[in-house]
Image (cartoon, helix red, strand yellow):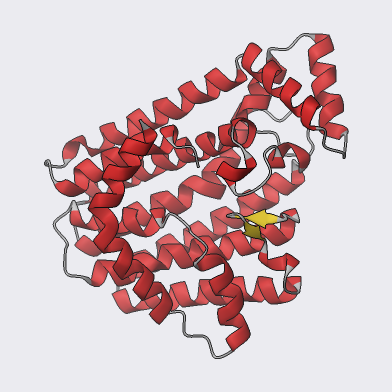
Length: 327
């Protein structure tokens, strides 16, 4: 099913993706070749371009189709790439999108500063819109994402991380950027505040569903599918919803076994398979799937205010794909 949805999405957005890729390349424009090399290592390594597509079609669902939505959409891909470069340094991640993480090839300060450059490029392009509220959206995004990363670092390894705390982290780390891309599509189209809020609601729920699906894939996916080793969150001491829910419903013996595994710095594939079995038995996997589906359904429901259109149909497909994808 997910491959069918992916095919339908790609067929509709293929012309947009070609223009987005061109705009990303043309607007990178650093003064230093090294900055371009480091930025390109991540930017052109096979990302889905979800955030640009969401801004483009959030604008078009409101009737804005001037071509400028393509240029403005890359703001959110530059922002996304900047956060990934920074996060990989902070998390000491080895892999990203099936390739070596940038900081394993170049010095960490160079990678961090390249992320800062991408943030600056995003702001420079946003200034061309001449709409202060888009700048405000970007400022809110960067503040929220920075605080989300700090919050996650402070809670790293925390055994008793609650579901509410987890939801707060993923809202700031993932949902706010997707929400901002969708709201900005409404802003540049100068649509009504009601429709703009509907797009923001769609983006919020889509972002939550997307992150929960990612957290599931970290346990249920393969290294080939993920482009990195499974179990990365657990090895970094990050508790996500499948594990949080399972710990809350485990008996004393199973809970202690999971705690011991979390504290073990080594990684044993057989023990990891045992952990997955426990997450399934304790309902952590099915609970996360249900929560992700609920958010995806709410995302689609948020679009009821809009008339039927190709863009509305696409946004519905993206919501379905967010929880059915394999990567």
